Length: 231
Image (cartoon, rainbow, N blue to C red; front, side, top):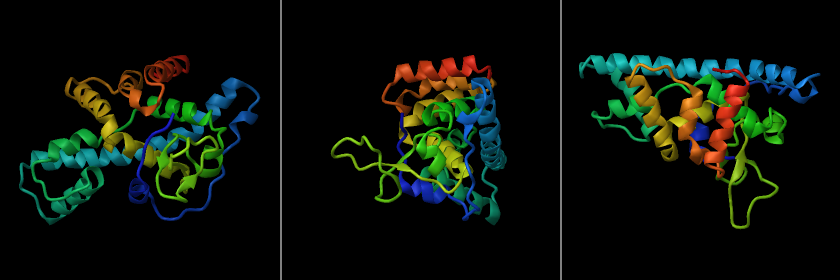
């Protein structure tokens, strides 16, 4: 269960160096219910903060679209930053709707359950030692952990982050930009256009490419969302 993420994404999304955090030992909770509650309570604020930043950019972009081209220097600077971050290029004045499709939130229910699934409820060494709750990979030597069971000829590593929030930020950016999640973004945009709330269980149906298990992975994520009463 792994996503594919270029090191460039890590560099773009990374913030300033922060004081190292200690990931709680969720498995030490007295009951399974307490472990899940602690895991959600730990991760949810990070997801909410990243989503709030994305939503702020989205709302400002919508305001600029409404201005219909009457943009000042600050507007143009803002759009240049978004184009470089989400499209990897600058200078195309006709790409605002393409940007809007990519700049949107990830439902917290979906993010929480994918994190729980990919990290074994925070028990994996990648989560404990590298804040990687989402199984994200990188492709430059030394960018992360070398998997113990990496197939011969494969060069990927499991990405290492400076903080949990950096990991969440990279995960959100990955779903919002990687070509393999184009269907996910199209479904989300259709839900927006129809005035529907963004539901993680519904959007999970478009994430078969997140895992080699495909449809079985989707079914498991949807069941975990239901069973944990997140929506």
